[in-house]
Amino acid sequence: MAALDRVKVLVLGDSGVGKSSLVHLLCHNQVLGNPSWTVGCSVDVRIHDYKEGTPEEKTYYIELWDVGGSVGSASSVKSTRVVFYNSVNGIILVHDLTNKKSSQNLYRWSLEALNRDLAPTGVLVTNGDYDREQFADNQIPLLVIGTKLDQIPETKRNEVLTRTAFLAEDFNAEEINLDCTNPRYLAAGSSNAVKLSRFFDKVIEKRYFLRDGSQIPSFSDRKRFGGGFSKTLHYD
Image 1 (cartoon, helix red, strand yellow):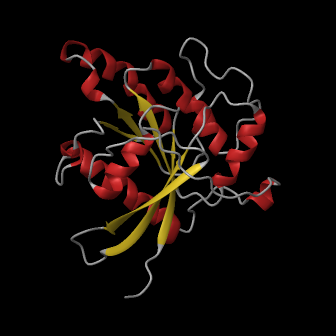
Image 2 (tube, rainbow, N blue to C red; image 1 turned 90 degrees about the vertical axis):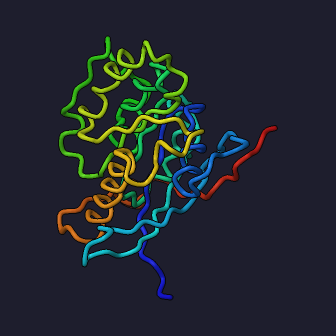
Image 3 (cartoon, rainbow, N blue to C red; image 1 turned 45 degrees about the horizontal axis):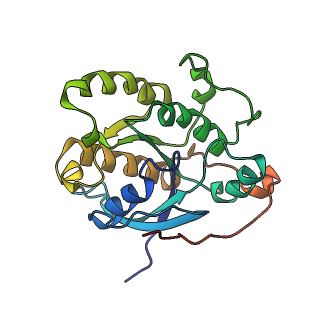
């Protein structure tokens, strides 16, 4: 069997929002029984059929890079983290629907990954008002995923989802809200599965088919130092 082409997708968000559980669910269609803190970066692979069911159907590897750390980390930690931002084809922004701060921090995560966080210690949010122009010229496909939907009481779901809906609009991205401990949220044929497939198709098109497809500049261009992977630590 010929080697499959692949794309690289970052999975970004605050510690504790469920990125590792999400990646495991996306790649193995199983619940992660023992979630762990990710130190550095953990990479898993999903097999995706581009334009499934059409004459253009082709199978690709989707590399999901689960980047650990906190957006409020010291500059030395951020400098280490940027080694994972090389040659990125797409970004999944993950926030905890029960944690408003994790939603707000997605703007800082995206700016850091897109190398636009010119003032990493500055305040990028003022009373929930963000400058959408910061993302207007972005060509990297984005997807916003809210986790821990199961932890929101039914009586408050509309209120919470209305509050977080602006995220997808600001990022010009689709939005998926789910519970990482229940695979049915990504069941084949569901609206979430369709959105996910559409996102991966867009990432592949930008990488392999569109002439104007854009990637984050290489580290040599950005004059960043190199590095390697850190292992994932498991805590019982």
